[in-house]
Length: 315
Image (cartoon, rainbow, N blue to C red):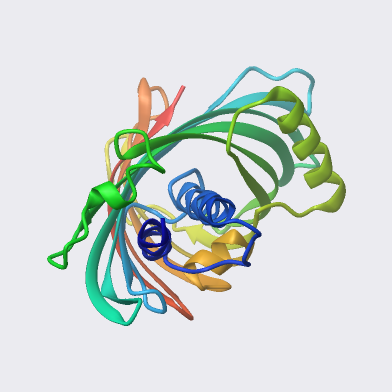
């Protein structure tokens, strides 16, 4: 049992407050790590790329695809929208650990698959600003593999996972303020949002309802993230018929509390990026621009490098 807990502790990167039983400690650590992974692999988390959590000796490779679909207006100033999330991450931790006076080198790998769907409402406050509220249910499947030459194997933690994988359900609540304005053909934007994440051991509707009410009233949850994003899209630098080339520099600051701060040992990080956009005609079906977007992330305990290549959808 002790070996299993030690291995799980290494897998989850950090020890949280002790509970009365080892199983309870293992479960708490697991839910905390799952919650942290979900934050980074769901909408408005870090972008696809490679990130090093320097205080925990952990590297995360991540790929995510967030989508939004806005329905026709309910009223002159409001409309409902859907959110979708798909993501995959691979986190690795390799270090020596002391087990009863014997130092073992353990290489842990935590793989996660994320899928989510949510509903929200947007309300226009005026010509240039809007506020959004919503929630999302997120399904995740986390698996573990452990490699060591010191006599331990995956069997030491197989009792905690079902065939080295475990299913989870989480929910996310969010509120966002958006300001957009065009000045001399430059499209300036400012966003600020606050998100709450909560991962459950089992998906039970009464527990979800109770948790949502508690989180909303207290404005805190297992993990809370506050973000501010600012930037602008330039006027066309090159134009070919109805298509154009524009740039979008931006900066994003993130402040985190709860499980994410404990597990990853970070409290804040910033992201700076530059988007290169090739815009298609407005009447083009579905795709309204293609992009290449390099960015870097930096914080106390976090270093990241990302290169996104893709396109934006317009339904």
